[in-house]
Amino acid sequence: MKKILETKIGRNALLAVPVIFHLLMGGCSKKESPVSQVHAAKSSNVLMLSESQVRLANITTQKATRLMMGESVILNARLVQDEDRTRLVNARVSGRIERLYIKETGRELRTGQPIVEIYSEQLLTLQREFLLALETGSTGSRNESFLASARKKLIRYGLTESQIEQLTRTREIQDRVTYLSPSSGVIASVMVTEGQYVEEGAPLYKIEDINHLWVEAELYPGEVEIVTQGDPVSLKVAGQERWSQVIVTFVSPQYRANSQVTIIRAAIANNNRMLKPGMAAQVIVTRDERKALALPLDAVIREESGSYVFVSKDTNTFERRAVTTGMEGVDRVEITSGLQEGDVIAVTGAYLLQSELLLKGGNGHSH
Image (cartoon, rainbow, N blue to C red; front, side, top):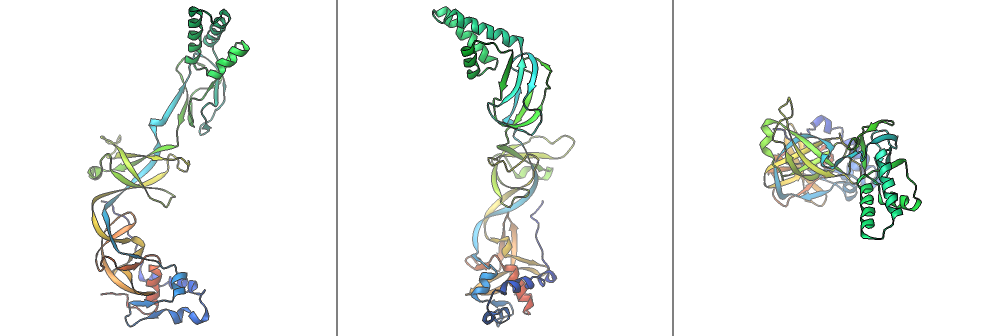
């Protein structure tokens, strides 16, 4: 079972933080110097600060509340291409590749953009057939049927309506026909070269739609039972600070080749194109959820002697109190003893309060 890594800052490391705290306090006037305004009260675990010191140190508070929490398991993951949205562009006719408009992978492609120019005897024959139908005239049901059939053949073999309209207008047969991309995406593979002869149906390009990706996370044998299809999980991509929630769409029924690893998969939107296939990620699966008294992780100070929080006792007055922690989530930790629901706790700035208390001679132990 892998649990979220607990950050432990020792007493010696905390002693270096007061320098920053006092630098922040440098914005106070002489009448409100840090030394005169940060007091150790009757209890060695209580600090009293001025309003300006609280503001400059960015100390914010929050009530301890009961939230749904559960045991969390971190899974290594990676972003991959959504194979459901991968498309092969195939040759619509037999012929010779006269020109490739895109010759390298990784290039963006838009629907309707020219991709290949082909010389095809088959297309020459179909164009002549269509022009013959035009010259014969469109009067009479037989002639209309002949013209409609010739037009459908051109469309079936990849010509667009605008190309057919141009042929109708100019009455000039094109010995080289330009084919347009049927979809947008990124070129993942170029499968032909200029001058190559291709048969009908031969693959020309592989196009990937990166507006939608998959995230695939690895499960080891002891973790297979913790998640099922349809479960919500938390996702964080490397280099990003924000966690997002995604839904598991697939759980592999087999192990990867030559390994004891199976995968789960979820789909994610990528409309801003900030995410790329191959990026590393983390997936957190939470199980056995229940209501628990919880605080943000940053509110809890962890030392070898135990865990502590700063409780707001009065205006700008904070008391250091020992707590016992339980399970941890993505950004919160359960408090099993030491606090009551509704207690107001310092969230941001808790480590600055801790370091200042040590500097002022606090004993570092709360009972």
